[in-house]
Length: 302
Ligand SMILES: NC(=O)c1ccc[n+]([C@@H]2O[C@H](COP(=O)([O-])OP(=O)(O)OC[C@H]3O[C@@H](n4cnc5c(N)ncnc54)[C@H](OP(=O)(O)O)[C@@H]3O)[C@@H](O)[C@H]2O)c1
Image 1 (cartoon, helix red, strand yellow):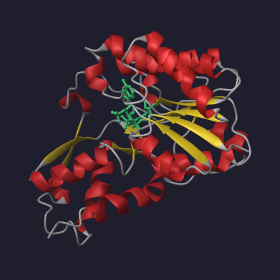
Image 2 (tube, helix red, strand yellow):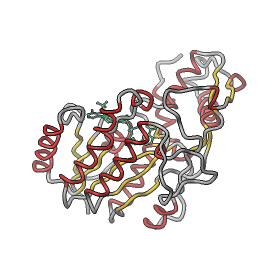
Image 3 (tube, protein in one colour):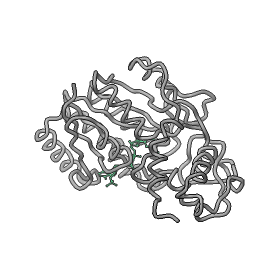
Image 4 (cartoon, helix red, strand yellow):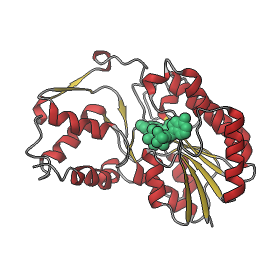
């Protein structure tokens, strides 16, 4: 039974949610306490002190360099945070299990079916490459490590696609959104519910895909959010964008600095088998608590 959790990255989207939801004594560690952009010696020293002081039963790392486009010109820092640090953490934690998060961006997105954990990554971006190296590093350093690959993470805290779409729908009269990149949003309460379910017993070690059921495209995802906002009293009056003004485009029409995978679909069978859950909740249902939070929070609206 896990009693004390050391949670690194506790101010991020996922970290904030886990800090709220995980049971027991969860010690949140922020950038102010552990700056992963600093010197490696200092990071190891501070981390060692944190592990000694709190003696956690488990360490969860949600800290990451997540600015996908910026990483293309900031490779050294992306690699330090996403690749070197998970390995250092795994080694320093020694016998303590580490849960680390990774990304669908480790894949090139060319597969015609959902990716399994057996599929070899082939990242298209510096971010994706750094996340892949981090997975390998933590799994090699810590025999009890668990790596959970998620996609399109979305929560009530921090910045994400859903918040951007709501803002743009209030500002613009026409919006073009990519409709040929496939994946599934991973709401942060879904991740915390899955961790809660496992932490009560034991969490399997190794590499797993962890996303809800279903799939969508960025365009269909945006359409769903705007549709829900349009029937919410806080948003009805301030939305400028109607559903008909949301236009699906191809990824080629929306060039980005870092290339994104066309398919981010992740097969979760390994996780479901190992944790004894035949089916995972559908992404829209998993999204409900986040959507409610996002729509209710705009209560200052007319
Ligand atoms: N976002 C996605 O769509 C997505 C998709 C798939 C997988 N993932 C993975 O899921 C995990 C959680 O992602 P998220 O969306 O919760 O990320 P996030 O909201 O960007 O949070 C990342 C956290 O890392 C911290 N951090 C970044 N650089 C740091 C540094 N130099 N020193 C110390 N802390 C630093 C940030 O601190 P501050 O709060 O101080 O900035 C923040 O708390 C990550 O492993 C990410 O790669 C994310």
